[in-house]
Amino acid sequence: MIVHPLFATLWSIVLAGVFAAAPAGSVVVKVQTVSGQQIEGNWVGVTDQAIEIESDSTPQQVAIDNLLSLRPVATAESNGGPVIHVALSNGSSIAAQQLSWDEGTIQIEPRRQSVIAMPVDQVRSIRFRPGTAATDPQWLGLVEKDHRNDVMVIRRDNDQLDPIGGVVVGLDNDKLLFELDGDKIEAPLARLEGVVFRSTAAANTSPPVKVTDIYGSVFLSSRLEPSESVEAIEIRLPGQVTHQIKMDQIRSITWAGGRVMLSSESPAESEMTPYLSTKVPTKLIADWFGPHADGEDLVTSAGGSVEYRVGAGFETLAGSVGRDQGVDVGGAVLIKILVDDQVQWEQTLADSTPMGFRIPVANARRVRLEVLPGDDGDVGDQVRFSKPRLIK
Image (cartoon, rainbow, N blue to C red):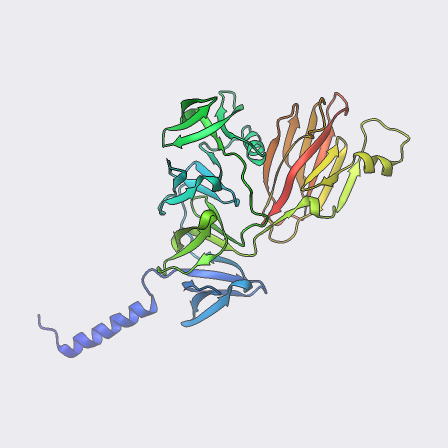
C-alpha cells in the first residue's frame, strides 16, 4: 500500500499532538500549600527553591517554604512491604528486602529501589521480624534506651525478648556475626528479633521533609534534590547519602515536619491522687510527687496523670517508660496512654525493664499519660517517661 506524503505528514502531526498532551510517564499529583490552596497537575520536577508542576497546560512553581504536602492522585497499592525494618539515627525507617555488611557500611536494599549504602554509625537498629502486641513494647523500650554496646535481641518462644550486649561485626541474609566477650558467634536471623546499635549522637531537630513510600518505608530527608529523571525524586539521608525514589512508589510527601518534646510544653491538665488519703494539702503533694519535667523526660509517682494538647499535623506520640533510676525497689505500676479519652496503650511495669510506645495521634486533640498503683500500694512507684514526643 502506498501512503500519500501529505497524509503521512498530517498523521505524524496528530500523533505528536497526542503524545505532547499526555507525556509518557507523567504522574498527576495534588499539592497542598501552607495557606490551604490545592493544586493538581502533572509532576515536572524539583529545583533548589521550588517544585514544578503543569496545571491546565501551564507550568508553575510552588516555593518549598509554601508547601505542606504532595500526593500522587493515583497511588499504586502494594501487597505488603518487606518485614525487615532499618531505623536510622534521624528517625527514618526503611523497609528492606535484603541486607549486607561491607567494611563499616550496611547495604540496604528496599523493594524496587536502588541499594542504599549507609554508614553503620548512622543506623540505630534493625528489626528482622514483624512486631506483635507482646513484643512491640519490649522492642521499642530497647530502641529508645541509650546503649554503650551493640545489643543482639533474641526472641524466645514465649515472645519474651532477651537483649545481649556485645559488638556486631558482620551481617548477611542468614546470620548476624556477633562478638561476645571476645568470642565471635554466628547468630541465625530466624532466632533474632533484631539488633540495636550502640548509641550515637542524634540530630536535635527532625528533617523537614518526610517521604512515605507504598512499601512501608518512611524517609526523613533534609531536602529534596533535583533529579535527572522526571519520573523520580532524590532525597538526602544521614551521612550525606542520596537516594532516588520513583514517583509511582510514593504515597505522600509532607513538609514542615518536626517534633515537640512534651517536657517543653505546658500541660492542659495535671493531677496527683495519692494511694492513701492524707491531710497534706493537695497542691503540696502535687508539687512533690506529681508529673514534672526533668530535662527531656517526664517524671511522676503513681497516682499522677498529665494531659497535653495535640497540634495540627502531628501523627505519632513516641517514647518509652520505665522505673525512675532513683528507685531501688517498687511494686507493680500500671501505665495508660489515652488519646481523646480512649486507652490506646497499656502496660504493667513489674521490674526495671522499660517499655516503648509509638501511638497514632493524627487528628487527635489531646493525649493523656496516667500512672496507677498496683494492688501492692504505691511505695517506690516512681516512673520516668523518656523523651515523650509528638512527631509530624
